[in-house]
Image 1 (cartoon, rainbow, N blue to C red):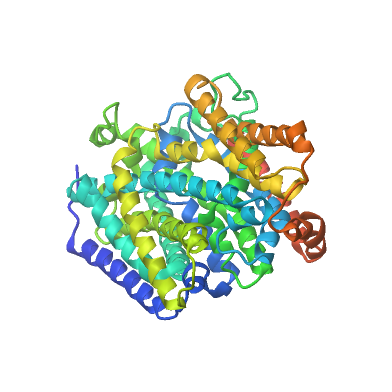
Image 2 (image 1 turned 60 degrees about the vertical axis):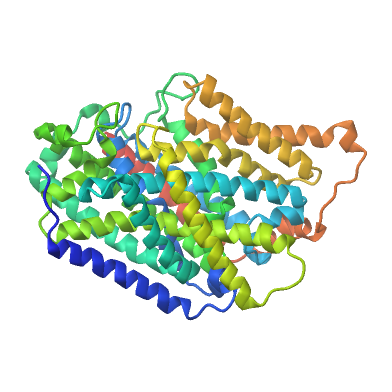
Length: 543
């Protein structure tokens, strides 16, 4: 059933790779310091940053995992769209509260704020946690796309990992954050075009959209599930855990995760940052809907062609459903479009891998290397060291990719499970810094660790609780523990301490109150209105 890749396809893939390397080399000529390398001199416009953020989230994990979830996963279907309702609400929180403060402080590493508000151990704890969790999640991305490369080329898994990793690391090391942002924009556009083409082919194969929709199982058409709560009923993807858990997850991911915040810090001013967040909040749902509809088409195609499922590689416990979309592409698309579809899949993987490698390098450089280095370096030496650190993290994530194959039934669920362990507690530490006077560093760290431990208990001993609730549970545990510790007698007799008290005085009650007189509230109202529009769309689809 497999179709050979033609020379035209290989030329398209080669042209894309060479073009990306050429762009990275051209951008590297403008780099003179680590700030150029990590935050692009803080002069990027909102559209490239907004689209880059979208590209990272809508990556290979989504292109492989979402259609598999919609078409084949137990308990899956279009319920995944509920998750997207949380995105515009999360953008409102970031626009009004988090990003104005971070931009005001001119951060490179978002965790530097924690040292100013709390202490150095808090900064290092959160930074170290980011390095571990994000590197591990990135290894899942490398693993998933390496499976696709192996399926198509027959190179073997090891060679596929090395092929993807080596190319991405090279252009990432050269291009820095500018290379990440602009390559992400290109990759997102290629990905969107290919998803539309694949959907057109699927609709045509079904004899029209109506026929495709009718062939899709009725129980998978549900978009809103208000009948379950996910707190012990064994239903992971109910409305409330996806909305509330998703809200906490997205606020934490977009506002407290270096891989996302770093690009938002690269814009020319706070208005551009907030515009980028608004672009993401408005445009993400249409893209997610697109690849969920591809899942609908894949399910209908598999119903009419049972041999399609048989042709999927065996994962050890059944067909490897994550490979359904690439298998359809290489067998159904004509020569030339196969090459473009492979470019789209590679681009999706690279858009996740490149940004994370750059942020892992930035965090290591800012929070550890420069923080503890005595003396001074030239700007050029810091730039060289930044590139070396990017290379090192590239090697680490590639090695980790060989050990992440049995976390969840779909790669999409795997990547969200990993994040949900720590997202809530991490958000709690930042929220305690923004909103409290009394809480100090040791209290915040204790809350963080117990919040993660509580989620770990849920994972191991309470599997009937939706992992989406971990984002809320971890947040609640972390905040409660920190607040209780801050009012104990041993803490009550001590004056709260800050490394820089002005940071707290400047944030929620001062700086934000003054700066929010701009048009940020108008952006927030647009996003809230968009939330209700999306809710109406889901009612219409599910009805």
